[in-house]
Image (cartoon, one colour):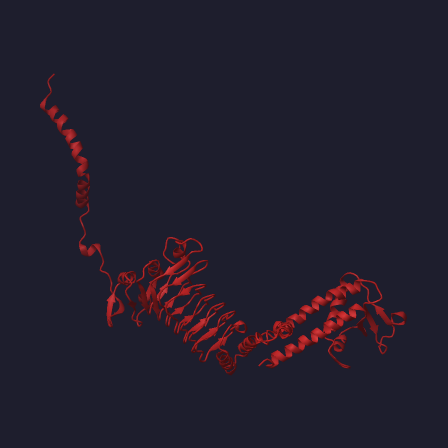
Length: 465
C-alpha cells in the first residue's frame, strides 16, 4: 500500500503540534489579550497616593498617606498627628492597634497622639482583629499578657474598649492615656498594670471599670471619671489632684492616695466602706468634701472614720454599735435606712396583730368608744368596749391600722401623734391591746420611736463626728 507524502506529513506533524500547543497556550492567550485589549499607560493604571496627612517626625512636620500611617503603627513607630487638621485625616482604626497587642515580644510600643480611634475594641466581628479576637486565641481562664507599652495621648476613642471578662489581662509595660477622651465604656476589670499608669487629664465620658484592679501609683491628676467602678481596687499612692468623680463607686477599695487636692465627688458612693491606714488624709479629704458642699460624701467619710475606730472597741460595745448604730444608719452615712426599717416593721408587726384579730380569746385588740362622743347611738351598752374579731379582708385593714397607731404612739397627753391619726376615723373610738398583743405593741412603739429619732439626728445633724 502506498502512502502519499501529504498523508505522511499529517501523521507526523499533527501529534507534534498537539504536544507543543499546551506549552504555549498561556503565551498565546496573553498575546491575544494584548492584541484585543492594548495595555494602558502607567498613568492610567494606578492613581498617585495622596500624602496629605500631617504628622510630626523628629520635630519636623511631614506629609504622609493613610497607608504610611498604618505601616508606621505596624512597625511600632510613633504617630503624632498635627492636631490642627481635619478629623478624617486624624482617624485610625482600632484593628491597627490590636494587631500589635497580640505580639508576644519584650519590645514594642504604641505611641499615638492627637488621633481619633474608631472601631470597637471589644465587639468586632470574628474575622477582624480586636480585643474579642485576642481573647478567643486563649483558653478560658487563661491570662493574657500585653507586652507593648501603650501611649495614646490627646486622642479621642469613640467606641468600646473591653479588655477582660472572663480573662485577666496584664499590661507588662507603661500605659499612658494622657488627655485622651473615651466616649464609650472602658472595662479594665481585674487587669494588672506592671508599668507606669498615666491617666493625666483623661476623660471617661461613659464609665470605666477598675474593679479589683491594683492601681498603686496611678496618676489621675485632672482626670474626669464618669461612672468609674473602683470596687475592691487599691488606690495606694494615687495622685488625685483635681480629679473629678461623677457617680463613682469606692466600695471596699483601699484608699491611701498620695495627693487628693480639690476633688469633685458628684454622686460618689461606697466611701463608708473604704479601707485605709492614714487617718489624717481621710479627715482632710472629708473636710474638703464638706467645704465643697458634698454633704452626702462627707457623711460617708465620717462613717469610714468611725468604723476605723470601731475595730479597737470592746466586744460588748462592738455588738451594741452594730445593732443600734451601724446597721440602722451606717454611722450616719445612710439616714434613710432607719426609715426603711421603720416601714418594714409596720408590715412585720401586722402579722401578729392579724392573728390576734382572727382568734377569739380573752385578750386581743379592743375598740374603746369615747364617753364624750357626739354619736351616742354608737357603742352603747355592752359595746362600750368591743373586742375586735373579724375574718377576711377586714383583718388586714384593722391589723395594719393598729400597726400604724402603735408605731406613731409618740408624745405626751394631747401631744401624741397617734391621737392625731385617730382623728381621720369616721367614728370616735380608740384601739387598745391587752395580753401578749400589748407587749408586742409596746415593743413596736419603742423601736419605732428610736428609729425616727435616729433618722432626725443623722439627717439634720452630725452626731458621729
